[in-house]
Amino acid sequence: MISVTDDEILAIYHRHAQERFAADDPRWKELVEAQRRKQGKRRLKQAVLGAVSSRYDRTQEKVRDTYEESWGATSAVDMVNATDVDLCEWRGEGALVRAPATPAVHHLLLTRTLEALQPKTVLEVGCGSGLHVMLLATLFPDAKFHGAELTAAGVRQAEKIQALPRLPQELQEFAAQPVVDATAHRNVEFRQTSAVDLPYEDGSFDLVYTSLALEQMEEIRDAAFASVARVARRHVAMVEPFRDFNEEGIRNDYVRSRGFLAAHVADLPRYGLKPVYTRSDIPCKVALGVGLVIAEKAG
Image 1 (cartoon, rainbow, N blue to C red):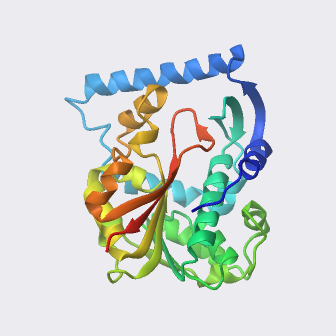
Image 2 (cartoon, rainbow, N blue to C red; image 1 turned 120 degrees about the vertical axis):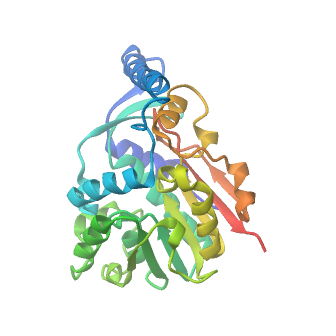
């Protein structure tokens, strides 16, 4: 269904890599072991305190407060220019990569998804400061794009960029392919709303997608999936850390200690969604496995 070549992914991965390692490199093993110890200690602390403290609960109130602060200080341009470094791995190779690397791979996957499905109406749920939805709008200007975001700060950041006559050059250069219409970001319609209260009619969008948004909604998982499925007409695409990709080692400790998404791909039919494509073979942070899952709406 989706055509993404290894060379396309490698071009992104290596462009952002500051240092690369073979899997058996002692320095890489040392870095991974430090990450493992860190996550193991956090998981142990959670187990000790979990029964008497709610500090580890990822409630929607805490998610909202965290991202009001985060998006208040971070625009889409800031995201693509970020200089902090992550430990990532892919195909037996480790690397220290700049933070924009994984969002760039996710953007590539979403771009190829739209190329394959050719939707006329598109909704991103949990769009943050609007990075993906505004980029995709400039690549596919004939489609109508909407962005739903929990925080007022995220919507404000997106609207600041929308006020510009053209998409900033830094974002154009971040795009997976040449921008078709650098003014089409101005046409995205943003709404501040929870994923469970999406203010759209049933079946409003040919494609509904998320990118590291459902990971934050474990507290409301059933209602969020049901709501996303409700407003989709044809397909739902999710770039998310499904539990299938995080069942062992560091990733298991990381996801469980933070209360991230616990759903498996096989759970999707419960919400009227039939998985038709899954790809998890992409560069990911050592501590968090992410994949693209595309589902058809039943019926």
